Image 1 (cartoon, rainbow over the protein chains, first blue to last red):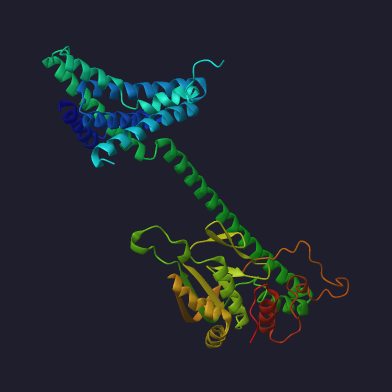
Image 2 (image 1 turned 90 degrees about the vertical axis):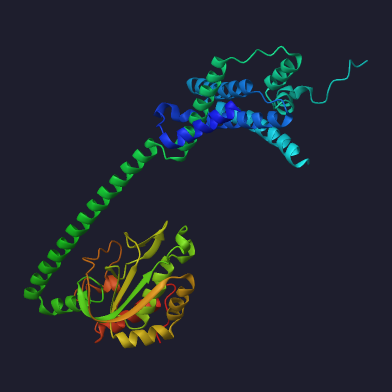
Length: 110
Length: 315
């Protein structure tokens, strides 16, 4: 519950304050957002499975975002940034898809 | 003997791993710990840390999403740079065109001076030919036709089908020539023998000048004759059909229209036939007009009407 309240508070704060993102972080934003989406879907599925845990949810959220951004950063340094982005998007995309399918089975029993 | 059976998808462990265990295994472990009663007790400090982390992550994700929906400063910068460059170049081009116009006016004046003293006959011919060839500015009664692009429906995107096309202007100009126009200009650009109306991307070019709507086509001639002539020609029907595409067409008779001159026509390839003897008709090379015809304007419109690929038949 705390995690959800906190997230909602954070979303409201982000919308109201609208902080500017430093230019050199801009490149990692798309990947971070996809990673956040993956964590959100994972959390929702765990909740429907009855095994939701706030600590696991928040740590997976944080580590997802950080690791995804780091991988892309590393890729950029090695000159394979776009390929790394593709790799991360593919993996996270597959996870989001199968989590979404599982959520669908929970909600619609189909 | 073959060894133990291998799974058919053994070579795809990576994909399988991603696909079969999409949920963070941490959830399962935490649930198991809770069931076993070995889960760590929640402290106040831990709860606060969780809350702070949640707020930070929420704010971060929202900020990222909002920032991604805004065009990045770099893109904006490049855009403004390009815009200023376009504006500068356009101003430069306008300046050059103006200078060009001044120079050709000078040339015409000097030519006139020279010819009027040396060879009055040639001078008279030059002045006669200058009107149909579009070199000098002219004024007179005529028709003004304004074509306006259709406005987007409900403030939506601009509909490509409601834009005036180069073809519409071509048809209209050809129709006007055929209906007896003596001089035609589109948005102030005089249409001459060598004028092309075409499109480049979304813009309509008359020669090399890009025009934007509304498009004003002005034709000098007898307004009533031109109007009835136009109505009888296919061009008139094409004009009427434009309203289907929500293009606004306004035709009005004008007492005086002033059309700018095109300046000197540069002929690079055309040669005057028998230039040695027949120097009294220098304009023939470019225009192929029937020189010596009394009504030069009419002769001109005949040639223009039949000479263009999609020209209308003169009634």
